[in-house]
Amino acid sequence: MKPLLLLVAVALGLATVVSVVSAGPEAIECWFVEDAGGGGLSKKPATLLLRHGPRGPPPRPDLDPKLYFKVDDPAGMLLAAFRRYPAGASAPHCEMSRFIPFPASAKWARSLSPEQNCPRALDGDWLLVSVSSTLFSLSSLLRPQPEPLREPVVITMATVVLTVLTHNPAPRVQLGKDAVLDLRFAYAPSALEGSPSLDAGPPPFGLEWRRQHRGKGHLLLAATPGLAGRMPPAQEKATAFAAWDDDEPWGPWTGNGTFWLPAVKPSQEGVYLATVHLPYLQGQVSLELTVHKAPRVSLTPAPVVWAAPGEAPPELLCLASHFFPAEGLEVKWELRGGPGGSSRKVEGKMWLSTIRHHSDGSVSQSGHLQLPPVTAKQHGVHYVCRVYHSSLPASGRSADVTLEVAGFSGPSIEDGIGLFLSAFLLLGLLKVLGWLVAAYWTIPEVSKEKATAASLTIPRNSKKSQ
Image (cartoon, rainbow, N blue to C red; front, side, top):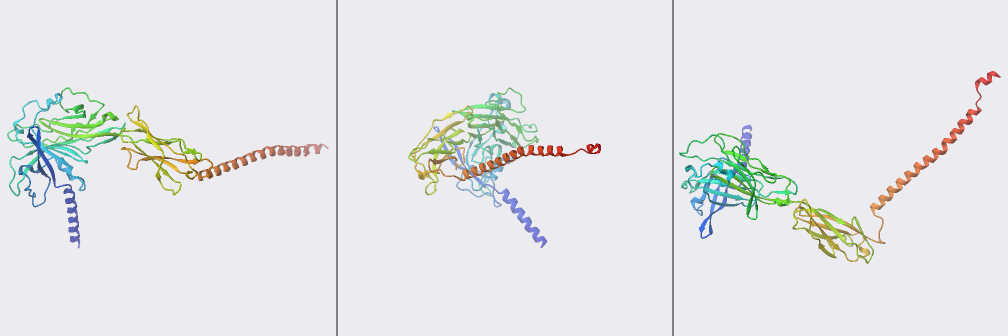
């Protein structure tokens, strides 16, 4: 039985390993986009085959063989991103287009490619693949083989050379807190036939972070680690990790370009472009930063509003203070208690005030409710204001007040507790006063008794003298 149990355990272990390795989609459906002339674009279906079963790649007669790619990823970053993709998540959006290697155009990055002409080793076809989803965003440069393989199925081999990846494409940061924009990249140099020998270790690279504003990119940070040259100063106190993770002699290599922006303000919202420059190669991803702050909600007058029968209570003011963004605030009023004890819509005139701006970039706004005259039956009901905003959970945030109708107030539980405590304290105070009075009258009597006893006592010496 022991060998059988061992075989079962090994089988279960292998199944676990296989399930982990085979997680994520087998293939990614993309669109191959190219210029159609006349200012138009044409789209053709394409597929990236990430993995396949023991029988080999599945045939795809519906695709152009030159647009059916079997992906080889020496650095593993692209495949790892899809390996963690949940099965129930919506499919990512994927586009690919042709790419031509070129030197970096920015002045600060020209030292990366001293020669303006690209090396002949980079000749041939290149593909730029851009993938976006709610879970990650990546950009990869692929180098396809010139001709498709014919066996076992018609498919084109493509090697991933450069990948730029963020696992948080839509960071959401609280107003005044630090923003950390995640960025990773990986580079696996392809075999360059006939090229001169390369220096050992990772190549020099450039890192660039920009924020899009009105169609233009505002440079926030640029860095070329290990290279001499004058760099533009960082803006808005921004910093970044700009380094390779290791210095293996021949690669592949992974690097970190995570961006840090302290104490974010509303003006720093927007689309951020992160670009990694290698000699003649570039990869870029975009992240959309949003800033938020949840409102504090208060209701006045509180905690009780008074009114006489047939009269209207004072105007209720529901204040949502120091929140961001300014758009999208909604205030709803509810009435709880009274006949039936259920929650129902409030009657009365309702409106929102104008927005008030604060020095930290947050805003405040109040909702107003003018109630109609009340009746005795409404005694004890609760008026509730509930605030909804994008910075709050779906249930919103609320505050309430209690209506007390004059002449119909009865002692509540809180009133009973208060009266009990007051009586208890009063009783204790009376006892203390009683002890003090008793002590005051007792002390003189004791003194008198002592004095009388002393006067009646005959000294011993007097007896002997007699």
